[in-house]
Amino acid sequence: MKAVRLYEKGVLRVEDVPSPAPPEPGWASLKVIMAGICGSDIHNFKTGQWITRSPSIAGHEFTGVVTALGAGVENVQIGDFIAADSRFWCGECDACQRGQNHLCKTLGFIGEACDGCFAEYVNLPAKLLHKIPSGLAPQIAAMAEPFAVALHAINRLRLTPHEPVLIVGCGPIGGLAAVILAHQHQGPVVVVDRNAARVEGVAHVTNAQVATLNAQHIKELLQGRKLTAAIDATGSIDALQMLLNCVPSGANIALVGISHGKMEFDPNILVERELALIGCHAFQNEMPDAISLLPACASMIYQLIDREITLDDVPTAYTQIAANQVLGLKTLIRI
Image (cartoon, rainbow, N blue to C red; front, side, top):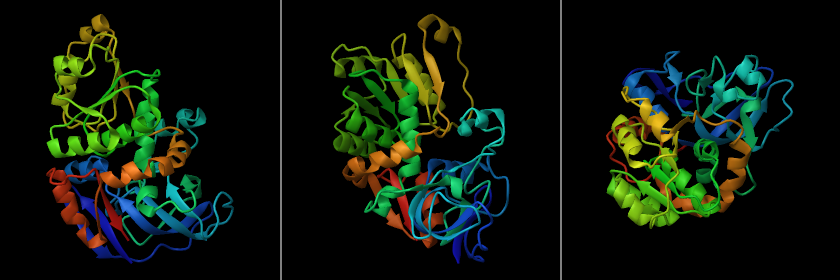
């Protein structure tokens, strides 16, 4: 079968590889239908930060159909259409025992801890598989995993009704957060991104307001209403430093971007202004809720898809995404 494998930092190859063996007990075999390229895929390609096995078939966002089952699998059946949880957890450590699989002591992800979905077929633990609603288009079903990440960031903010929200960064997670808020939140949403075409596209789809990362500008847009919640989906140290200077005292900031580099700041800023920096790692138990939300948000999501490509196009797409040369939020791979 054809697959895209990551060997080391900057080395990604499209190759013919053996198809997966019959699934082991507790595992399932899947035919991949549609997959998405994630920002973390690009980060790993650029930095090699999470390469633990080489080569490894990349990719963790996808939808597919179950083709074979290992012994003991009961949560899915052959022929089921599914989306997959990307997290590869042990189930035994203290965090897993608390139901916080996303904080597992040995947490890995599909495409890193095991072969991923940038291939025609993949074998995965059946516990990671979630059935998708009948008739849901594969382009939308493939967005379930990043949708859960965006939903987790919103949940971590514990928003109150009508509360204004600022989203900094209109890449996939920031854009999908804006989609979720447009569907279920009653308060105003303000979006910021240095890519003018991208931020305008998100604003058009979600009816959000576009701003610069400037306290006065945001205050004027909100007509004096206090901004108390923000999402940083940039992974930019400079953007986060600007955001800290931009939000008023008492604000909560959910950090969901994957950062490059380190920042220095005076912790007294957090103390004296009672600012809260809230880490958001993947998602906890949001996957079923995210899947249930997808049909209602499908029309918005469609408008934010950049394009569909083939497995042969993936290396070029990596380079273009890394260089910020795409306008839409998500590049999808039709297998």
